[in-house]
Length: 190
Image 1 (cartoon, rainbow, N blue to C red):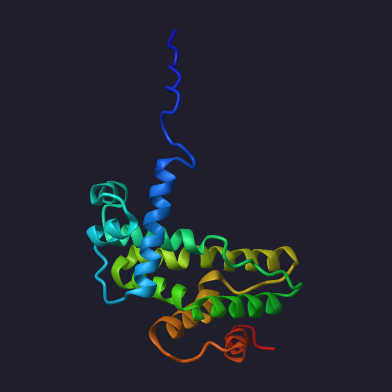
Image 2 (cartoon, helix red, strand yellow):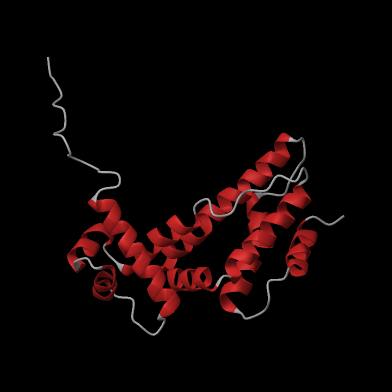
């Protein structure tokens, strides 16, 4: 008969321990550098110095700046926008688009998104879109539960999410509530 040894006290992950403090310090350093000092190169040594940790700690945990940015973006975008429930698909999508537009207009958020997409490549893009697509899927699933036949996630992403990110990240055009409503109107014509 085999027995499994219990882990030693304090072994493994320590929520709120050193690992959590390092992660918080490094995440803060990333957010500060991309928001406050865009001229500063984003390198592991620069980020580690700013965070007050050793560069090998950052390399060991994240490996590359792209992976670190993806982790920061995933952490930042998880649960920051509440999936609205207005009672109608149109209302939910209009509120969602408006909330996302406000988020993308925040200079710190925009700087993080731009850096994550620019340096993180596909991994960075996935971090920026993952939570957003899950939120859209929740809105569409709720509409199906109401008995409606919403558009597909792909179509909704192309009509709402993609233009918001394109305009927010790659242009200086405003993300007004009126404009966000037109996105939904094109997706859900009367």
